[in-house]
Length: 487
Figure 1: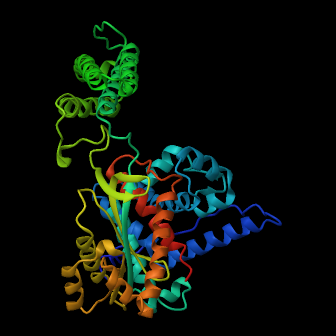
Figure 2 (figure 1 turned 135 degrees about the vertical axis):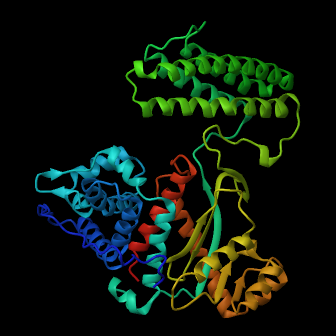
Figure 3 (figure 1 turned 90 degrees about the horizontal axis):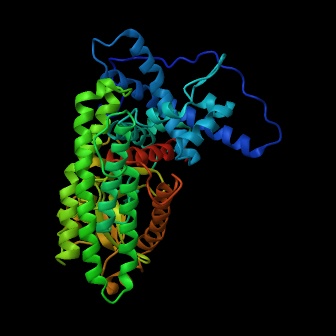
């Protein structure tokens, strides 16, 4: 097994089980029985694959020598709990921490699986604790756990511990890519102005609620009302004869109002920075409000310039300089060309799976994504780094991955290409090959796999905010799909 993914030998911990109450008997309920069997299987798999041991190992590596023994013990105890909580939350498809908290607290079975059931009652089930559990591991650490699982199921001497009769066939790799959409407004220029304005006004309201007041001609609520009226006017002006002229005039009024809101936010920020100790806010809360105002004030001239260039100047803004959201800087415009959705806004997601449906590799791109060919090259390099018995010797993909240079490279590496060609005549010729035809038919299931991963959180759009949290939101259900694998 690869030493980069396996738990190191310097930390040998036995995950102890404490006294827990018996589960409430449930009679004549086949759905409950099926869920209980699934959770028992998942628990056995994550123990047999050493994922919990790796989670503790990762947690210990974070701690320094000055960490108290009490803090160290709490982190060791919470690491497997956080892992199980995230697996269960995504398995149940519950993106809301509040709803998941209520369900976890009221179910003996779920609490027992997450190791939060004690003799005196359930603990660690509040929504704030569940939210901390979702961020306990970074996406790089989750990737290490997934790599460990992949090495476990793809090696004959290890897969038996998971109850598999034979290792997963990793020699055939089915790949595809999609857009992992972010939860943002449609990037209309004047909507960006409204988002910046409302964020600044909300922060200003928080500061004024702490009796830190600076003179304002109008209240934050009235300024927000004015901005909303201008947005409504902008919407209704598009069908008029003089629509272009009216839109320019309304945008000038929005810019003037936004400058006024920015000035008020800047003055209230100075008050909070100098007098936060006289308020009821903690230092961390005050710093968070200051950071929110700073981020929006930095963005304010940029969104105003972009709206001016596109609406008043009627000039195009390059894709690299375009601002798509006031709150999500790490998203991109991805031209998909799908029916009913020409473009999508988010991050590119690449996924590679085996014929039996096990996810072998994946990558969520923070920056502008490379071409499909380069994504495949990077994926093959990551899979070669894994310690598995059957390395990739066949690639199956759609026509978006078709490239003469890529096909030559695959041939040099001894990898058979079953990539769907762009040329219709060549495709017709290849369809006579039974192996090519059957694998292309199987590739349709990869589209379903992507749909499951995207829809499992309760909607097509990921509700997590920030790239790091979106990466965790994807990688957690990926780990969940690994541990529920039954062969």
